[in-house]
Amino acid sequence: MEGRNRQLAFCQFAQAGKGQSCIDTDENGRLGNRSCKVPNFARIPGLHNEEGRPTTAALDCAESPLELEFWLGVERETNRYYEQQLPARMDSRFRSQSGTNTMTIEHLLANEKRVHSRIRAHEILQCIGLLLARMMCPHIRRLSDHWATTSVGAIPAGTFGRFMKRERFGRIMRNLHFSDNDAARAQPDKAWKVRPIVDTLQRTFLSGYTTPTVISFDEAMVPSRSRYNTMRQFMKDKPHRWGTKLFMTCCVQSVYCLRYYNVRAEQTFF
Image (cartoon, rainbow, N blue to C red; front, side, top):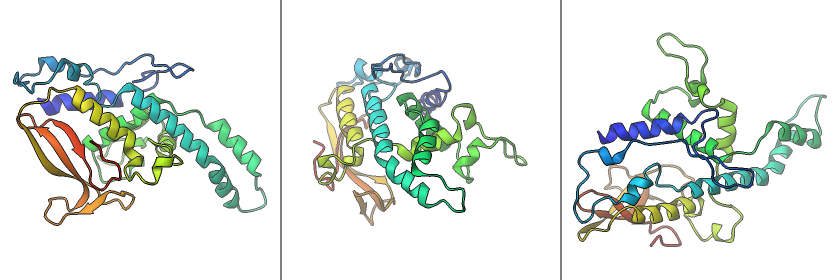
């Protein structure tokens, strides 16, 4: 039952197609319409009534442990990164030209400005929803095959094109950022790339649950073999030997995560 409701919630993220935004903002960046809804978790049997029970606040924010303001911050940092990288990208595109019909950097920049539009928060949520949909319905083909317009034998045509164009998806994923790379804290803080996610989850995890009298403190491993992960560790005795090691404080009964801590990050999460 729990897995089914989680799947329904994930699918509703992906269904935020054209004209169906999860987060809508006006021209001043203020929050507006929210159209994504998740199942009524109050009707799910098995939610215990012990001291460490789920609170009403957890059910109210069950749409996502990441607040709406968080996604507006992701929108801001994503567009900031696009602007920061634009000169270098135009220079690289100019140098890669061959032949006699070359364009000036000014013309290349004008063309880029014409085809690009500001990345919005609800579009980022659509991309996350599509990635979750791929996770639930994986295949060994390329990600771009989810946008295939024709079927190949018994393999059906892709469905992602109903929600977002492939070029737009790629443009958003190339620029997706959560923090400003030029900030002063970017160098000393190893978790700076995902710091907004960490801080938001730490706050919402605690606000959505009553801390029980009996808790568990143990270590966990988030699998990751990426060489870009500055907090990656090798633990030979773990099922996943490469990854990010966390110390987690959890409820003994429900295994609900209250806090987590990474020893490799320069700044602690507590």
